Length: 156
Image (cartoon, rainbow, N blue to C red):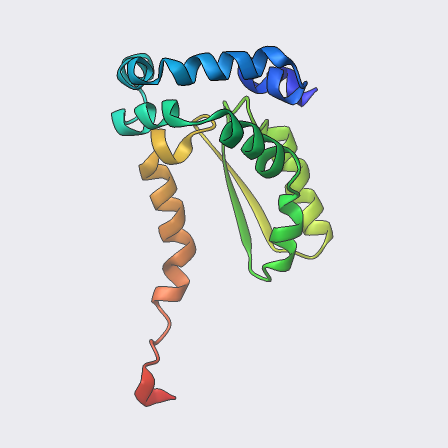
């Protein structure tokens, strides 16, 4: 299923393969070189972001993948937010397939959450690779708020 579409290190980590830890530790030992090479290999990301990706540790990578990505049910958070939800998703996202996000949208609507899915040209890293698209979506969401009269302390 979904795990099969993850990158090699993520897939090995999810499967509990000791090779994942070994690969990660090797990358950590080569960190000075990796921070220089990463921006050259990932030219579609800002250099600072690509270099920063080489600064992880095994513990941070493994725990983030387990606790934030795999174990967290984002639907619970979105249901409890009590605000309309817009999910902006890249059509070429292989890490979080659009079908899964479509199912999440249906689940939210079934729970009476005003949810909308906007699929745009891009991949998993929309905020990094398509910041203009993300900014435009945020402006659209915030436009109704900016047209409301602002209340200051004197109005209270």
